[in-house]
Length: 252
Image 1: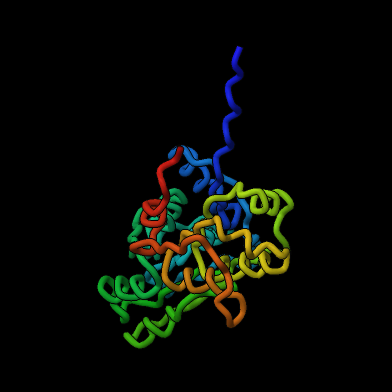
Image 2 (image 1 turned 60 degrees about the vertical axis):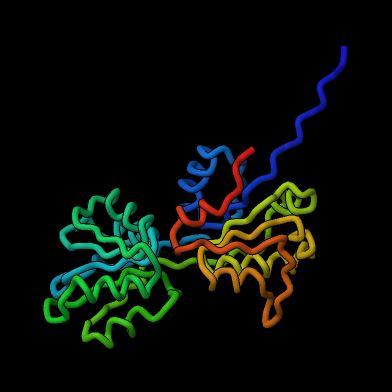
């Protein structure tokens, strides 16, 4: 009796998002037929603090789903309209119980334009719930249009210190076919840890799927040099999760 050849394990897509964001993304990827592994480049730490004062606030601004989660841990108030940077953040706000949610479907520049189009600077301040590190100058963009923006830091994103043994093994054995990057900070962190582990050359068989050109630039570089030899670096047509997923090859 002829034995059937053993099936070759599918190459995995490596998700680098914080665990809170990775879990729903993994479910989405696996529903599409992809094998996955998770290597969070950031760990979210919720910061203690008082309930936010909304007395002069006309709207809330969220630039990440973690901002929604952090706000929800501080207060049960859902009586202000929400402007979200993208659709995933908008979904998180809707799931948290906000009734009025608007998505800019883009980046902080798109969010600023959306707020300027829909809000009146004279109607009150804007509250931006954010992490300790932010991308883009949302306060500057809106301040130039006459808005008062208060930034409330409600969480911190702590960088990973090393790659897990499992991920290192996947990389050494070509078990990873692609890595998904959603922010310049996570891409820089991953490349740094690759270099520290001596695994940069393992990327020659790996595709980098990036949410934006800025993310792609961070994925290619280590320090001031472009040294990461990915098989390819692909950039989403717009800075949204669905556009990034559109880049992925068919699962097989």
